Length: 298
Image 1 (cartoon, rainbow, N blue to C red):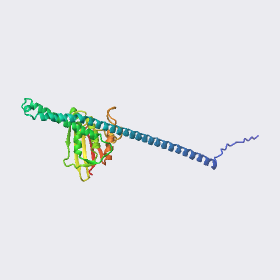
Image 2: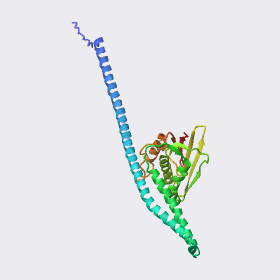
Image 3: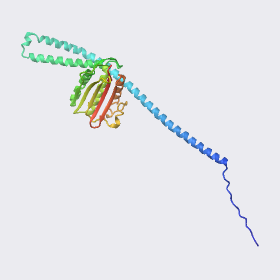
Image 4: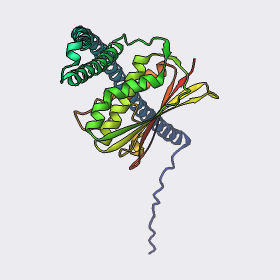
């Protein structure tokens, strides 16, 4: 007896063209969504970064405005102090002149202490002259902060600025050397604002050196460029290379917390640029720093 068995074959249906198209469309859609989400994430991140930068610049501008207001208030106070000091100085000068007239009388000239009296009066007059120069500088510092246009002798402004810091430098045993060009032309600028710039740079140099150091100040005329240059160098520790492109940024400082606002150089740079000049810095760690101010001759 023959028996036969029937075999069954399992056949899987292959996907049709319509299903493949749907899968491809779904994949493209998912890729599109992923691209949109990624683009939105990068865009939002860039936007947040820009907003943070705008906030930082806004805060810096506000702080600079506050600092300018403080400088204006300080200037008014300095002018008031100068006026108050000028009154007693005038009285002292008058009495010193009266004593000097008395010393011309015959009886006093025969006195054994005549030379001591004469030396005392000479010292009074000398220190009166110094006090008057100080009050004159205070009055100049107290002028309005908007740039004025006047004929300025930069060498003279530097001499006056050095007088301000002479005692401090001597106390720290820091020598200030000058090489001021005798043929430096006068420039059209604002002497009070230039003096503020020089004071900021020199004060920074004193702080950088601390004690036992040297500051060099040099002026030169560059007629081929129609400008003058003021170089202020110190032999302090120098500025690290990674900080050089940041030192003119508002609030950037290498000083210890509480010892610097980070606004001095930023304000100084803005002043120089508003006066039509530019400021540059060169520094080498362990060798010192040089600030150079270029100002047009007009």
